[in-house]
Structures are given as C-alpha cells and as structure tokens.
Image (tube, rainbow, N blue to C red; front, top):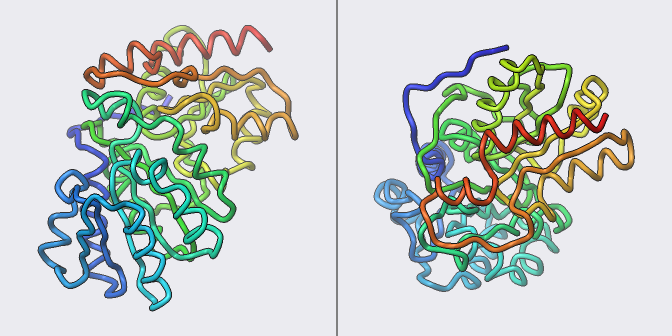
Amino acid sequence: MKEYTYTEKKDTRSGFGDGLLELGRQNPNVVGLCADLTGSLKMNAFQKEFPERFFQVGIAEANMIGLAAGMTIGGKIPFAATFANFATGRVYDQIRQSVAYSGKNVKICASHAGLTLGEDGATHQILEDIGMMKMLPGMTVINPCDYNQTKAATMAIAEHDGPVYLRFGRPVVPIFTPADQKFEIGKAVMLNEGTDVSIFATGHLVWKAILAGKTLAEKGISAEIINIHTIKPLDVEAVLASVAKTRCVVTAEEHNRLGGLGDSIAQVLATAHPAPQEYVAVNDTFGESGTPEELMEKYGLTEENIVAAAERAISRK
C-alpha cells in the first residue's frame, strides 16, 4: 500500500486564491468578482495586483452572476466567488438562466462548503450544492481535496470552455498531492490499488479515505482508494474498472447523501455494474454550529466511519 505523508496543512481556499493570482499573471482575460468576501476567498492578492480586473459587487450575489455572464460576451473569463451557500442556493435562478442555459464561460468559485464551515452553523453550511449544480446541463462540477489540487484545478478551469462550479473549503487540511500535478477535468486519480473494496472519495474526505485505507490494511482488507475530484463529468471508466475488481463500493463526501457523489456512483452501478454500496455522507439533515472536527465526528464523516462502511459493503458481496 502506497504511503502518503504531509509536512504542511493549508486551507483549500488559499489554493484558489494563489491559483487565481497566477492565472491573472498569465491571462489578461481573467477577471475576479467577489460578493463582499474578498479576504475569506483569499482574493486579496489578485485585487491588489490587478485592481482594474477585480470587481467588488458587495452583498449582491445575483448581480455578481449577471455581471459575470455579461463579461463573457466580451471575451473575459470571470471567476465569480463567494461562500458556497450564497454561490448556489441564493442565486440558483441566475445561474440556471444566465449561465447554464446559454453556456456562458463563467467560473463559479465557492468556498466554505459543507460542515467544515464550522461555527457559522446550518444557515451557512450548504450540503446540497453538488446536487444542485450537477443537475444543470453543461455544468462541470469540481471538488478538489487539498491546497495543491485546488490551485491546479483553479488554473485548469480557465482553459475549459463552459460553466464550472469549483467547490473548496475553510479548514486547514494536509497537503499530500504534488505541487506540480497536471489537473485533468473528468479524470479520477488512483491513490491506492486494492482488491476487496473500492472507496471513492471527494474533497476533504479524500485524506480521511487514505487514513481509513491504512486501518483496513492492518485488518487484512485491501482497499482501492480513488480521488474523484470531478463529480461531473464523472470518470465512469475508472469507476467501472475498479468495481469490476472489488465488487463493492464506499462513497465518501462532505455533502448530503442525496444528490452528491454517492448518487452519481450509484447511477453508474445501477445501469452498468450492480454492486453493494455504502454511503459516508450527511444523512439528509442540516448541520449545526460547532468546530469542524466536532461536526465531522457527529455527522459520521471520519476515517472510522469509512472503515465501518467498507466492512459493511464487503459483508454484502
């Protein structure tokens, strides 16, 4: 089993901020828009270096999406950023009508997603956003796992023609992917090959899946761990190749179990390769105020939960 280590922890939102700054230096058509959360989205450096290409729209998220859609007509590549709750739930109509329906080249960049927003509580902890965005025709949905992958994803989506939803978070998490990685939209990343169970994880749950894999190995269970950073388009080929070997599945995500990665995987299995599946996700409920660690524990999003889910899936073969 491959060993993964880290020497530093960093928030994925900083990966977005640093990626956007580098993009700004490379591509004069890249512009940034933010809804009164410049510091929280780590867009300060871009704003300082490119003030003429940064637009602070205030607490007016719907207006931000409309501005971004209009800018694409002039050839700009707008990165419209705010908290995930405001980037999706508050402005879904504008995204659907002004961006997705007309295929506008807008990059919707959403920080503070999931439970790990923490103490701000249920009103800010959106757990439905992946489902909302993946249902929009033509929308690409990306949920990277650490600082390096988020930076690489931020830069990669500038080259993609079409609307993108890029989801990232607030807490510091281990940096374990390469700094020089090539980010391929729609291409899953094999982290560890295995034969007994497939664990498909996304976002903050990828590192926890790696830890779970180590525990399972100590129990004599060979887990195949795959990082699904792109939820739409899903790497169906990678999913089916893995399940053909292991014949059972665990999906792990910081999202409602309804509508997220787990449901995307289940759809593939139902139509192409039926197999037992266990979900590690929030079980159809809102969050609450608490530290990220407390919330991940309470809502069952830990490596121990992944281990238990893997054992259940194996027992159902």
